[in-house]
Length: 118
Image (cartoon, rainbow, N blue to C red):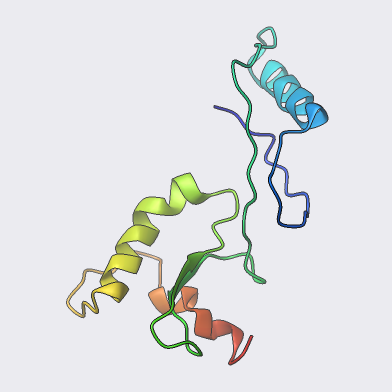
């Protein structure tokens, strides 16, 4: 699995891989690993969400009762999923006796950091 790691703004829609993006990705693989460019067996694309500050959003919505956010992982969902899942589970289950994850303050991810009605 490989990605060109682009962040091209796009309107929400069915996403399809662009031929240019596939070519860029293959070129980067060839350059980084000094190997012939592989032929992809399958291609896909997806839309990634970003919060205004570039950090994930995880927590109860301060304006909508019962709404919980887990969004904004950008291109790092695979890497951040284990830690964010734990933070989300603790919040959803309203656990107060959970062991904190080093260097991650759950309140720093809260939707409330954007202010009311943001």
